[in-house]
Image 1 (tube, rainbow, N blue to C red):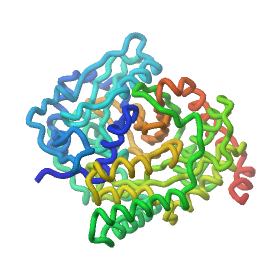
Image 2 (image 1 turned 180 degrees about the horizontal axis):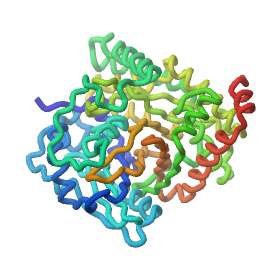
Image 3 (image 1 turned 90 degrees about the vertical axis):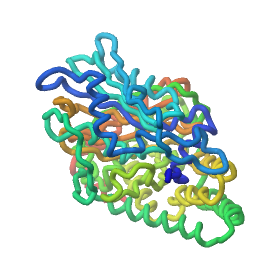
Length: 473
């Protein structure tokens, strides 16, 4: 039987239908060194390599039963009888000199348009012409198909832990063997996810009549939004957007982020949020915007996956709403306030409101429930910016005998949200990928410099001052 999209998966389709500027594609660019032996792969070699492995992921050969998610029922995944790998794996060449700026521009253009809903919802492009003999693979996948965590896991279908060129199909993976570099969900994320499921499932099963349940739960959701979640402030970051994107990158050694977290308290995610806060503060100051006294509101996805779910497609997410203290002038103080905020999120019902409301949407046809609930959960009234942190492989990976040098992560933009920030770690480096609306974010480089400067301010704090900062209330 064809599998129906979940409420959250269908939500990411519906978001595109409600606003043309909301392109719900995630992915990134993998940059490789020249192969140690031989030459970079051809597009036919990449197609053959993928074709031999798609049996592990049959949904990558399935399409939606209906191109729209706003009907009486959510679409199902059905086999694409016309599936042709050539429609999904293409080729591009950068003009000389093929530098990083040109690759960033290519990335922005690649993500400036929707995927074809009449086909399986993914694309990959072999990119040649990079300087120093490097080459790259750009890929994008619709958010209804995967979340950020599994998107990173699926890179393992292409890559391996050594430079040997793989030519045979990969045997089916079994999660129980623990082959993933991420063997378990962090404890805090698991607690948040489990609690969110209890809230949503309890609400759904407490009432026998779906339409009555929907009406009552919609009113409850409105109360959650009004009484428990303060409205996000009005900012220049939250304006109507188009489909054309800009893209910027910031890099930092993972060990330095770990050292900051150890010296000042908190987690790697807290440090990522603090860096994002520093960049957003600089951006607002450069625009002469008023700095909101309570900070900007960030939507932070939290995984509910464990080892048994690591290659399960679809979305297993909860959401935290975290206030980013852009009005605080000192970076250590910004980090302390973020640590306190994320700790509150681990036990706060309000922090699980978004997940609960998505569960509520499953009670009624999408045409009835989705538009109102989606606009409530993902509107600019609820948050100003999305920030994600996804851990990747801690060891070097290879494809076609070439070392994967780095990964650029790309985050979807929601309607009226001009910028999103994604952090991804790989082989000792954290890469911040900044995705922005081209028309309303010509100053994306100000944000990128602010993120780098914020990390430097935290990194440069003397050890004795770090101890004082960490102990300060």
